Image (tube, rainbow, N blue to C red; front, side, top):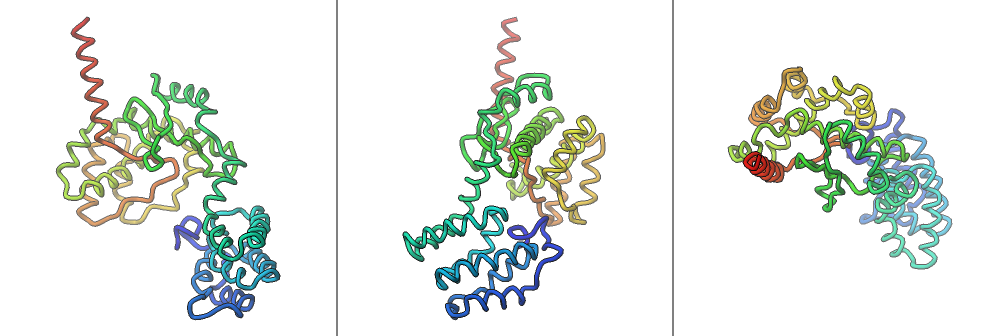
Amino acid sequence: MARRCGRDGRPAPDALPVEAIQQRLESLVFLVLSMRRSVEAAAEALAWFPAARVEGLYREVEGVCRTSLDLAGHFCVHAPEVLRHLPDEAIHPWVLELLEVYDQKGTQGCIRFMQQVEAQALTLRERQGGVRLADLSQVLDAFTTGLAGRHLRLEAGQDAGQAVYTDTETLFLPAALSRFDTREDNFRLYKCIIARLWAQTWFGTWREPAAERLTRFADPLRELALFQSLEGLRLDARIAEELPGLSREMERLGARPGLPPAWEPAAQRVREPEADAARSWALAEELAQSGILPLEPLCYQGALYPDRVAAVMAARAARERDQFAQA
């Protein structure tokens, strides 16, 4: 609930009590409530949102009630997802569209419409503030070359679940970004993603044979996740030293609410100037033995694929041997 409805894992400072929200919703749609249809879960979720947003939602529910109490009851159930995904200025037009769906397809059509609110919000963000890699490729290619001092290819990841990673020769990026409301912030997010992937090659994330190391652990996926959390802290510290302006953008877009206390000693060690990937691996093993969980990923963090990196590095080494032999 904290991740889905809170901001930085916390309820809004002026959030309304659950009981008050539940009573207000029940007063609006009590005629259609039953043992099988309750607004209790919706009230618990709405108690994480700012009071002004919830008050605005009451007005929308009242408007839907004038058309159909049954539809208003379903709307209350879906209300937390509506607030979660839609900005305030988009909610009233969305409700008007919902009522048009009701006129054409009835209650069942409206339920399907409400279940699609996340996809509808994504389309809205893409239309208003989204950016596409294809449109920014020249600018981002120049930015990447400026960072790396050599050419690193930029490609759109084909698989949505594996869109952001590097194999040390290519940076695989999302084909489009619409996480933030403005095109400027989404463009900056591209730059932050590129910087983190570039930092893996520049600051030695892959100097340690990761694929080989992972074979030693009983739970390699968990070990890799812990290593990635530690490397993220280390790389962000190195970026802050060398590129402070870019580091400030990364902190603004991907601000972390604060490290868990159990993470503080390890974080301090990987942020030291002499820290390297070997230290991150050693600390990952210590954290795994202590039962500590990986950190939540930040918005500019990609994935790690040691097998793909190993294959590319092996092919590059073979090419360099052939070139040396020819010379």
